View 1 (cartoon, rainbow, N blue to C red):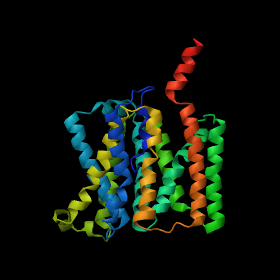
View 2 (cartoon, helix red, strand yellow):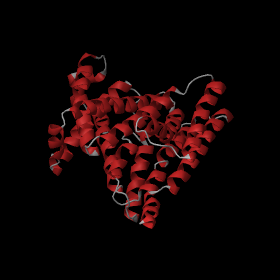
View 3 (spheres, rainbow, N blue to C red):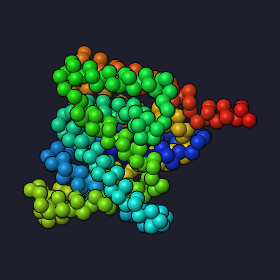
View 4 (tube, rainbow, N blue to C red):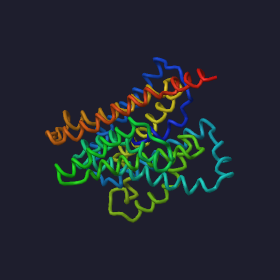
Length: 317
């Protein structure tokens, strides 16, 4: 998504009010469809270790971003970094968090737990609400409290009915939401932040390749035809992110927020109807509670959309 590249992480670039265009909607739609189709790609890499796949994803995303920064002459972030060196450590931590999210997602896809991965991304907006309460000290509105209550209920019911915590779902939701909160705090733009994150993680990936007993540990592998499909992880990561960033300039924030649900919905449909993962009445109850929570969250989001809030403020003056 991510989905891998956090949707929440990049909404900070969204202006207060943006006029929605057909081109913007189509651009956003393309981004969400690509993110939702990630299982198709990662399933083809099932013969590789999940850590190995993520190592390549970081390497080739770094390469692709380097080209984007060089061609676009995007070096303003260096001044920001120079004035605030602490950002290096913050960005390194955020890189580890998004790396954890990527790794968990790839493992889930290749371990036939795509359904649980989709649940994680459905839960994510509601986890984000809880984090905004705890970390950002934001006050929750009544519908937000109710939405969170439904999310917590779904987790508790899964523990009771299935006898286990939804570990994959919780790791994906927490890592995705924490990453989003950290990105809201950084002055770096989305592409610049991701470039720095992958640059800081690159030495760790190289070290892991050198000492691990995997195909990528062999120098000959990097010059073989087998590596081409792994190299696609770079553009596969970058293209939807570029499309999403572009869409934020052409689609209203409220509409974009509703469109966010397309990605986990596509993943859910792939899990149930294409990969035929088990979906019984117990799981239907669990997902239904999350969907009710998301409906409540969406109603609150629509009622408090930027354009409506702006009109309220204007009416007061």
